Amino acid sequence: MHTVMVSCVGKAGKPNATTMAWAMPTSHNPPLIAISLAPTRHSHSLIEESGEFVVNIPTLELLQAVYACGSLTGRSFDKFKKANLTAMPAKKVKAPAIRECIAHLECEVEDKLTTGDHTIFVGKILEAYADMGVFNETYDLKKARMLYHAGGNNFALLDPKNYKP
Amino acid sequence: MHTVMVSCVGKAGKPNATTMAWAMPTSHNPPLIAISLAPTRHSHSLIEESGEFVVNIPTLELLQAVYACGSLTGRSFDKFKKANLTAMPAKKVKAPAIRECIAHLECEVEDKLTTGDHTIFVGKILEAYADMGVFNETYDLKKARMLYHAGGNNFALLDPKNYKP
Image (tube, rainbow over all chains, first blue to last red; front, side, top):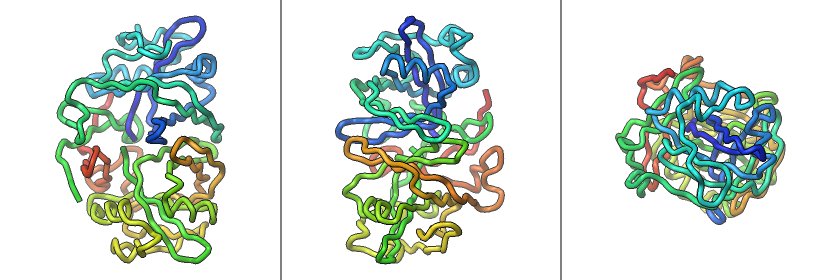
């Protein structure tokens, strides 16, 4: 599954970031994205509190940070500091974006649904931006070495070779 | 995004299959999976009607079928026939599985949510099975050449090289 980093901030103002592989787009118009987050996670409380989050797309260069943000809890750690990430002010939401990621979707919570041991947060995408030249009609997979979770502690990249039907 | 094929059957008994890249797991216990489907799609009506679907994992060998099932409509075509796919009886649901795929998740609709121009169907996984040796703790990406949608008509595979943090 495609691995993303979700950043958020609570009322106390301390930004947090978490890693997840359970995320998907869910509407073209309006543009919506759905993320699955366990209620036990610190980010779950912050997103409940603020009604906002940013979905950030990490690459291989961030593998250590991706792992750290998925393993540590923001209750005890400053994850931005611990993972050497930079909290970059977002354009439309208070939640920060993660500067080291190649693309960012600023979201406002539009709806949510309890699904077993997780919550689906549906985010309305208020702003979307990416590094130049990365996402054209075809992705440039040599530039955008995005991470895919491949079970356990294993991650993989997409092979840049393209297949067309 | 990871590309999956969803198979279903309506009351009329004609099986249908569709392709999508908007799907994600959404709970460990109980095991749930969420799929995003536009209400205009024929499969949307069939899943509404039957309350069941099967998520099937295709590989590169099925690229033509993946594309056909994502482009044609089951209202006018017998997609299994058109795409040379075999409807295999499932174990717990009336919807058929797609035999040519390497893994299958039989689902019963547990909940749904309207999200913009799509519907999220949350499926409770009643049965899950895969070809031998494909999904161990680490995926065997040489055997399981799963398809990832890379924008437009472009698909990519995961590079079998593994990265660990």
